Image 1 (cartoon, rainbow, N blue to C red):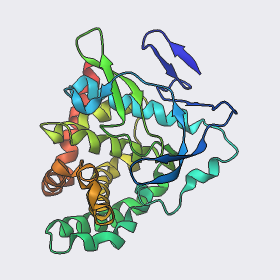
Image 2: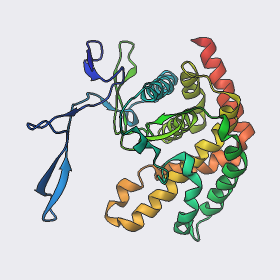
Image 3: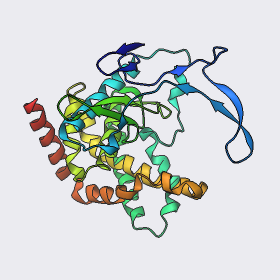
Image 4: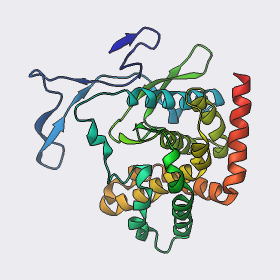
Length: 289
């Protein structure tokens, strides 16, 4: 663990991430009995180091910041892939419903969309995933994914050129064994929810990613469907969670406000048109670097 004077924060193996601080007895977690308004209950408690900055959701998503987002996501996965731990196998998470490897598990939750025209869009994406992603998965490069590289888990600070630089990555609770292309698809999807012209997001994020990890043919071929797949996961699983915890509806549906519109837009534009925008924009952005 090192401290960088430029960013004024702690980094872990080059990642601007939080670290857990040990308790007085040397444990990284402790079981505490606390009354949080529902009577005394036991909670697992941990203390993490503080990261300065504001979430990327609160600043303008310029092409340069989107480029840095893609670049950071790729660097992050390369660093995570080097991680060593005797319990690393727990990240396999074979039945983890948020893993893009398990996207077809979404079929079990489609009833939450009964009567909603969105259900047919989601069914179409599931079909595309089965027919075009699953057969090509053997060509994907494996890694450990952060799994939730979204607009509320990326911190930024002002830089020297009146823009912003990425200063922190939060919430590694969805880490799972997956593929590099999954992380890129997740990053593009969530940045789209914060941009006034969502389709323009893919190009600079892709350019940043490929400055570190150029995609292979199978990964490029599946990027569009994987972005759609993550939108479907976000929308359907949020609806499902609301049925379980209606008191948290506002928080659980936070990515759904624009997500439905963007998913429909991408689905209606179709793969060829969206890829043309993304890949041509990425190539032009890379040429300018």
